[in-house]
Image (cartoon, rainbow, N blue to C red; front, side, top):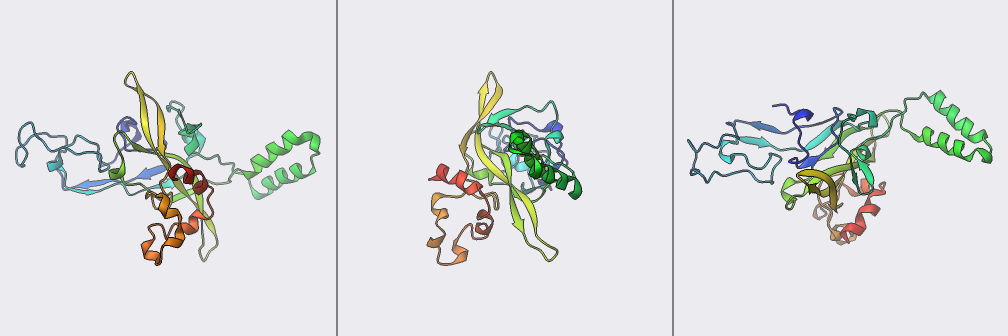
Length: 261
């Protein structure tokens, strides 16, 4: 079964992502009957007491559990970090944590050649201080990425850990550096916020941020005690042992830590 953005509902989704074609997620449901069928024929449910799905999986609440077969839940989102122009002009926008979302979950790309980018750097170097605004503008242009960042390891956090009305919102991206025999490269990983909707007259007017303690690398929650690496005698006791090397290069951890202290 393919799920497309035109059928996506922010009101009922567990994971809130920018509605763009550059990102793909997979949930596989097989060996199933129609989960919307509330008939009790052939199952152990009683009329009027049908067992329904809750918020503990990626499937929406209110489906008939007995008609659900093998479920491979949401695991990763992959593709490329979207550009602002990848968003539809009709996309709804909210202010979340002081910035506009889903715009905050995009990144500009300026496809300049190496020579063209060097012109910007040279012009910035030779301009006098009286052209400070121009210098700053050129410096900002020179720092814009040439190509979109790839997304390979963007893990979905566990839906079962959400409280009432809580959702996971992909607020923005951070990069992690990887090494390979062919050279160093960067990947984008998501910064998830746990949010609740602000509803007025049955419309979502915004999102309240509940916490920011989801690890971008593994998608698991970072508890305050996890920040002290020295407490673990063995690496296998550390729930974030494989994440700490990536944390070292992120400013993200400094933003998150006060929220969990």
